[in-house]
Image (tube, rainbow, N blue to C red):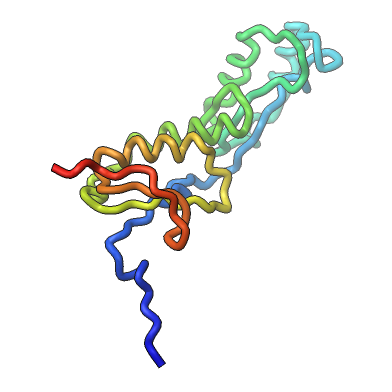
Length: 169
């Protein structure tokens, strides 16, 4: 019987897995409507009182997304005031939903990576993930890899979709 050879493992193909850069930490979405009268009306005095009495320490080392889930017209200062309360505790705070938070996290991480390891190599951006990696992170990763990689594919080694091939000199 002929030996089965794993051609993928023996190839020069490098896998770029965005999950490898996914930071640990609890993601929390804080909804401003919980502090609004009937979820819609911001009464400044009451709003400030709710914030004053809230346990902010529970968000220690959390990644925070601040939203308002109702159609309330909330002044910009309300989100800012909540962010100021969170700042001593949270790892990162954004205004937006949890998807926006993941995007912001990757926008912070990916520019800081050293992509020189991928110089002149075929790279596959791993497509399947168990963590909530946003599509925008894949786009950003491809943009950072392109100046270095000989080629870029997306997916899994057995069924990769070619995306880019560097021009030959």
